[in-house]
Length: 263
Ligand code: PEP
Image 1 (cartoon, rainbow, N blue to C red):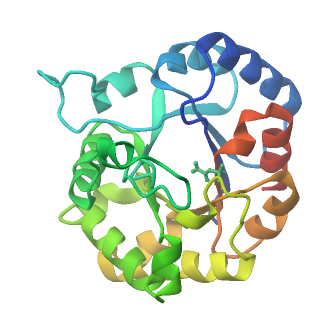
Image 2 (image 1 turned 45 degrees about the vertical axis):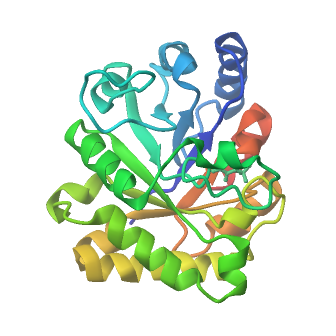
């Protein structure tokens, strides 16, 4: 039986002071409820404060990105070892925003190219995280243009194959996958629950081919893209959807607590 997991991706929102207030409110809202595993992914700067506040709770901390080298002359980067030392037990990898696939948003070309994420760097990041005992939350998903061209299944297959390339299946127990259709992220356009269920089921069958039936059965596959308290229950009740990766709605502690409660 897979335990549900709900992770909040705060993206580039909130100062450390604002993060503290939000987490305090979330802790109050959630009380002693224990319906799902909970992860908050604040900005790097807020991780220590949020970790301090959540230490005696069941809330775990995730980072939003990582650099794969252990240390060195890599200005501006943060390693998996540093995240572990700061108390992170999860890290998002290959989010469509770091992959530069911003969906429908009007983003200047220089911003789209800024992050330079590729399937290969996603693969290196997963390897570094696993080495440090951090659970990668690997994001995969198609853009609207790719969906319109009936390329969804092929895109998901390629992203998973390349992300997991040459990683040891026996070390992948910690892996979490989030199906995040790019067109649903931050747009208010949630994927139909049956279609989200179909793609999450597809993720599981691709995993079966890549890493074996055991891991395909136990790996948690989340849905992400405009999840709110009003649609979470239907999404999370699908057999192959093991919870959610939540962006905008995780910034509101009451809304996020309601989403967790639906899991
Ligand atoms: C995300 O950032 O991963 C996400 C799913 O965002 P939102 O919930 O705002 O669509």
